[in-house]
Amino acid sequence: MLVEMRGIVKDFGPVRAVDHVDFTVDTGEIVGLLGENGAGKSTLMNVLAGSYPANTGETFINGQRVSITNARTANQYGIRFIHQELNLCNDLAVFENMFLAEEITNGFVLLNKKEMIRRCNQIFERMKVKIDPRIPVENLQAADKQLVEIAKALLFKCELIIMDEPTTALSTHEIENLFSIMRQLKEEGVSFIYISHKIPELFEICETYYVLRDGRLVANGKFGDIDENGITELMIGRQLADDEFSRHVNSSREEVVLSARNLSGEGFKNISFELHAGEILAVTGLHGSGRDAVADALYGVIPYKGEIIINGKPMKAGAKIRAFLSRGIIMVPRMRKERGIHNDLSTYDNISMGYLNTKHKSLFIDKKAEHERFLRQKKALAIKTEQPQNPITSLSGGNQQKVILGRWLETDSTVILFDNPTQGIDVGTKFEIYHLILNFARQGKGIIIFSQEFPEIFKVADSCLVLYKGEINAALGRDELTEKNVMYYSTGANLEGEKYA
Image 1 (spheres, rainbow, N blue to C red):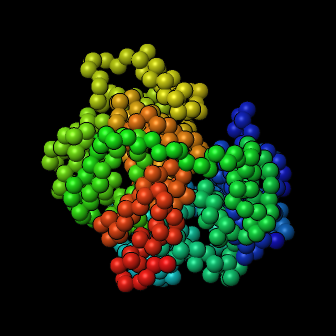
Image 2 (cartoon, rainbow, N blue to C red):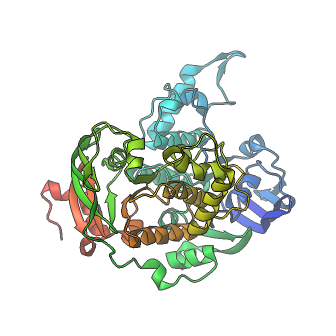
Image 3 (tube, helix red, strand yellow):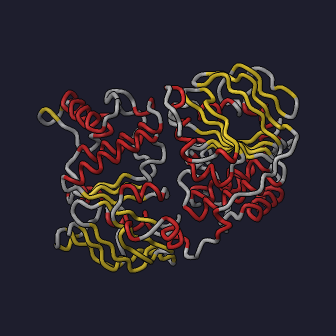
C-alpha cells in the first residue's frame, strides 16, 4: 500500500470541508476522485500535498505514519500535485519553470542551463510533444502551459502524481498522449490520483473510484462495477430523471437572426450558415479544426473576411466586440478564468460590467440598480452566493459561468455564443447550464454552441456543423447527429475515399 489517509477532517472556520474521509492509493494504481464543485476533492488533496494541515486524521506512506507539513515535504515523499490553476511564472522560460527551486548548478552559483534544457527535452520527447524549453511561458498556448505543468511533475522521481482537471485545455490527441504516458508510468509503479468532471475520461484511465459529497466519502469501488449514470447519481445525491437526459422539442422559427457568408480568416475559410430564432446550432471539430477561430470571428475578437449579418443588417468590416454587443450578440467564452471573469472584482462588478459597458449613461454607478441586477440574475440563473461583494473567485466554477452569462443577459441579447460552456464544471451544474440553454431557445434567442464534447452537443443541438481543417465538412440535422457521424467528418475520413458504413 503506497498511501493511506484515515479519518481526515479539515475545517475552515465553522465550515467543515472534509469530514472523516478515508482514502487509499496502492502502488501502480490510477484512482479517480469524483464529486461536484465544493465536495471537498481539492481540499483533501491539498492536505495530502501539504498545502493544508488536517484538523484530525492520519496519513501513512508505505505503512509508516508521516507528517506532511508543506509541498517540499510532500515532494520528498514522492508526491506531486498538478493544480487546476496553472502554477507557472509567465516571465520565466519553460526550463526555468520546470526547475524552479530545484535548479541544477555548476558548483554553488552558476546555473547549468544546458543540462536543465537537455532534461526538459527528454521529458517532452517522452510525452511526444514539441515545446522549446528556452521560450518564455507567456508565449505558450493554454494547452502547452498545461503540458509544462505535467512535464514538471514527471521531471522528478515521483511515486504519486495528483492531477486536478489536467485535460481541460488539451486536445483529443494530447489527452491520448497523456493517458499513454500515465499507463507507461503505472507499469513502472507510479500511482495517480485523477480529479476530473469528465466522467468518460475517468472510466477510460482509472481503475478505482472515490466519490465525495458535501465533504464526506459516500462511495468507493471499481469502475468496472458501475456505469456513468450510477457515478453521476452518487455525485449529485439523487437519481437522475430520464427527462434530464432528453433534449427540447425544436423551438426554431423562420426568422434568421444571424448568418455568415463566406467567412474566412486565420485558421478557417468559406464558412456559411444561417441561425434562426429559437435554434440551437452546434459547431464542432477536433483541435485545430478552426472551431475556436470561428467563435472569435463571430464576436469581433479576430479579423475576418466575408459577411456577418445580424437581424438582416450586415456588420461593418473590421467591427469589434463593442459593435457586436450593440447588435445583440453576446458570448460566454472558453477558458473562463483567462477570458471570462475579472479575478480582482466582486460578483457585483462582474455581473454589472455588461450593462455598464453598453447601456450606462450616467457619470456615477447606481448601487441600488447594481444590487437589483444581481438579484435579478441570481434568481434567473440560480447563482449560489450570499455575499456578492466578495471576489468572484470565491464562487465555484459553475457559478462563475452563470455570472458571466448573467452579465450579458443584462444587454438584451438576441444571439448567444457558448464557447465550451461547461469547461471545468461539475456534472450537476452542467445540467443546469443545459436547461438554461434550452430555455433561452424557447424564448426565441438564437444559440450557437462551440464544443468538442458529443454528449453535450447531443443533449441540446438542433443541428451541427462539423469543421475539418478550417472548413465545414458536414452540416448534420438532428436525425443525422450521432457520435459516429461527428467523428467520421471531424477526422476527414470522407475526404480520403473511404466508404462510410
